[in-house]
Each structure stands twice: as C-alpha cells, then as structure tokens.
Length: 436
Image (cartoon, rainbow, N blue to C red):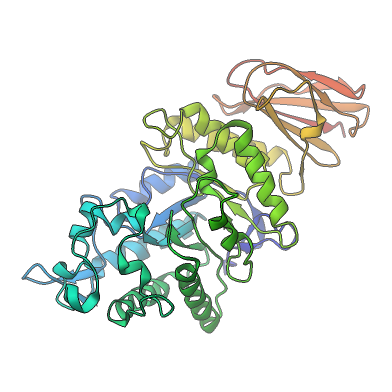
C-alpha cells in the first residue's frame, strides 16, 4: 500500500512519499492537465526525464474543456447534477499519476474562470444555470475587470462575509465531490486558490473544510494557499507562513517573478520565518520563456535551479507561453536536477554561500553536507570555493546538463580552497566529495 505524501519527519523542509524523502520536479504543457488529450503520454514523458510533480487547476475555461456540471437541452446547467465525464477525467488523471508515482498539486478555485469571457461561460453565472437568478444569488452576470480585482462575489459567500448560502451550498457540494474522488489518492497536495487576492477568511474556510473531511476519512492531507503578491514579504503571504496548523506547506511560486539575487534572498527570508515550524516550500510554477513579460528562458532555468539550492521542496516549469512547460529545454533541466540529486544529498544539506570566494552577485549558489559540496553556476566564469571542510583527498565531477551525463571524475589534492570554472556553457553543476 502506497503511503500518503506528507512532510518528512527527518527532513521537514521536504516531502516524504511512500515512506521515502522525495524531491518534486516537474513541467507540463498545461495547468489543468486532467483536461488535455493524450495526458498519459505527457505523464510518461515527464516520468521518463525524472519528473514527478504536476499542477492541476480545477479549471474549465480553455476550448475543449468540460465543466463539472450537467447541461440541459435548454443550454442551462443544473448545479444539482454533476457532469460525470468531467469527474471521470479527473479520476483517471489522478490514477494515471499514481501509477507513475507523480504528485499532483490541486487548486480548488482558479480566479481566471470567474471573470471576463470565462465567467460568461461559467455554470455558476446566474444566466447559465437553472438554480438561481442574479437577484437570488447576488452574483453579476458580467465581470469585466481583471480577476485580480476579486470583484466577483462568488469569493465572498462564506458566513463571515456575505453568508450567501444560495451559492455556497453549491460550492460546498462541489468541494465534497472533489474530495470524494481525491481523498483516497495518496499522491495529492491541496491548494485553495490560484493567485488569490481574496481574504484570509475565505481561504481559511475552505482549508478547515478540507481538513475536517480528511480527518473524518482518516486520510491526512497537506494544504496551502497561493497568494497573488509577487513579493513574499507582502502581508498576504503571512497568513500561510504564520498558520502551520492550517497550511502544512507554503507555496512560494509568485517569487518566481523575481530574478537574480532577489529571488534567492526572498526564499532565504521565508526559510527564516518558518524556522520554528519548518515546512516544505513549493514552487508549482516557474515563470520565464522569452515569449512574454515574465522573463527569459535563462531566467526560468536559473529560478528552477535556485529553488533547489535554496532548499525548496519542489520546482516546476510553468506552462507555455509563460514558462518552459515540458519542452526540450525543460526536459534537460529536470533530468539534470534529478541526476544531481542522486549524487548529492540535498535533503541533509545546508546553504553554503559563505564558501564561495570572489563571488559576484547571482554568479553561483552552493550547498554542503559534512562530506560533500555542490555548486550551481548561473554564469560560466570562475570563483574560488572554500573546501576546508573536506579531507585532503577529494574528488570533483561536473554535470553536463545538455547531454545529461557526468564528466569524468577528477581527483583533487585539497589545500583548503579550489578554483572552479565551468568547462562550458552546458556544464554548470559540480559536486565535490570526500574521496572514500
């Protein structure tokens, strides 16, 4: 029987799945992956390159997507009747992921389904269902503002806000149905929203509902929230960081709008905030592709690796065009990080920036254990590494990311410091170990 994913007791900043500490790496062509055709082939590709982590927004706004409710001959949805095909897609997706030991991070509510054109098609829109009118529900039939404005009263139905039972009853029924399918699966993580500007109370209401149901079923789960703010120091993020009884992990994906040293420094600041109750920091989306405003492909690669060296529990390339998805470049770097993790013990390691001499800003990042040091270079120029913690007899090995192979092992006579220079642009990870 597969053991459920949960924070590791030995390494609480990382996940444990099926009894073993697990580093989550991913990339995919879509966020609502359960809705795409040929999903099993996509999952096979991910697993083949060492990936084990996908995002699953419960979203239906793209062409060809199904909505969760049945639609009558009159074109109206009945919110009392579910669309079996939608839920079968979801179940089959979770099953396919479990068969491949892939972890799924679900987002219950995706704000982009509840504004502008998607809202015009959404079953919860009063004009699209036979269950309530605009007057009865208090919901507008048109929302023209960006979903970040959080204008839709759909996100205010909880008792402490509008106490809108007319709509909330259907929301709760929907979440119950989702949990009925998802809770038996041991490979699922839960996030309340995508990039929300909702209130902490909204998030807490659904988090408590999920935790209560999981307790009743005796199936422990881990929950987080994804706030909209790109700055992890924003008060929004404090609600997740400061409430470990609700949120067993912290999704820091929005930090992947940051670049360079600021990206790293923000992650270190969150690690300090959770020091008393260490928890996994997840990156379910890493931005950057060169195709939009969110950064270049090089930005995405650096963010992906920096997340690992910052001690994050997961890192996943965002979908195109906002990220590298599971394209050829993403495949290479997923595979490379997996190879690196098999050679170097990230779980027990500590950040070692102090070991880097003559380091320029954002040039390189370091982690170390009591018998090994790993360095990731963002730029192919040299620096000096303090190797005084290693014995006199050491070995050094570079990883060729492009080819996915290790360069020949080099033996070193350790004098306490070693000059490092990547041999080429595709070889930017090196590990030094005690020569045993």
